[in-house]
Length: 185
Image: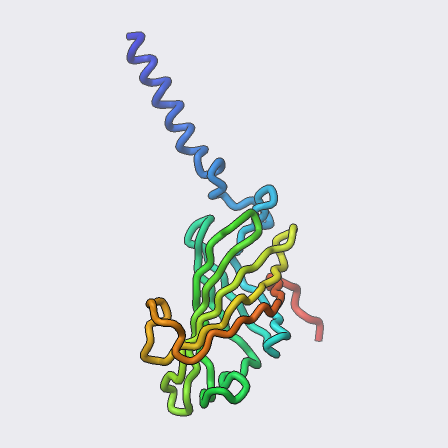
């Protein structure tokens, strides 16, 4: 009888621990997305990337606390890279991020420069990092490199970029898009 009682107590303790585990693992989002200095990235952001004379709409979605996806739509980006390439339009970008600290992240994004017929002229990869403010509503992004690959290359293969590898170092900012009240006509 004593053994059965001990097993019940153990089962209740294990059940309670499993229910509490997401809280201890930081898988529960507190109000405002801030966890003792650890920011939650999920959401829509409005970016300003003045060094490249563009702005952008950014959607960040987490797979977990450690990794996730980035979707970007740039406005004002010169797809010809200053006349270097005959691209007339640029696709939206997509990429991934990994957490490197409480409010710091590394990212890789990829997009295509397209000709007038919509065919790829190049594949662009941008690698960099970003850091969120203490209140998790603004981030500063630092672009490390912009690599331009031929449309036939694998941008994740062993070959160096067939067109260019540009050391960047430019800095931009983005802020969360808040829910605001409607304007008054």
